[in-house]
Image 1 (spheres, rainbow, N blue to C red):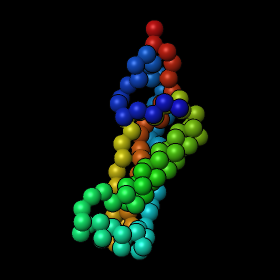
Image 2 (tube, helix red, strand yellow):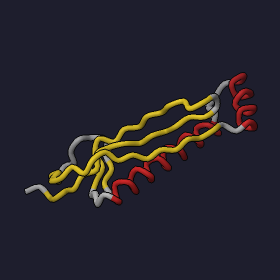
Image 3 (cartoon, rainbow, N blue to C red):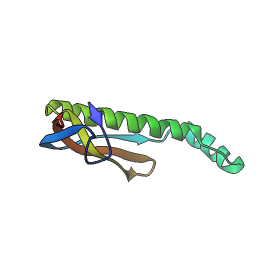
Length: 107
């Protein structure tokens, strides 16, 4: 599956638009990680626990979006974007979305 954040794929022609596909996850912070983050906030530096959590959320959202596209029989997802939203205090959603398409080689 080709996944890109641009509208076209070099060397390919979009022959059918199958529709919008998406994948999301909602994650809550962990109290223990909040304590470590508060300490890190005092001394400065990257809060690695949150960096890891966001990276895992991004990958899970992408995987779910690709699965949604596969169910439609897509060859690719173009115009991929990410969005975040706060769901409640301490929990956030990460959404990946794009347009599922069928491709053929350009002539």
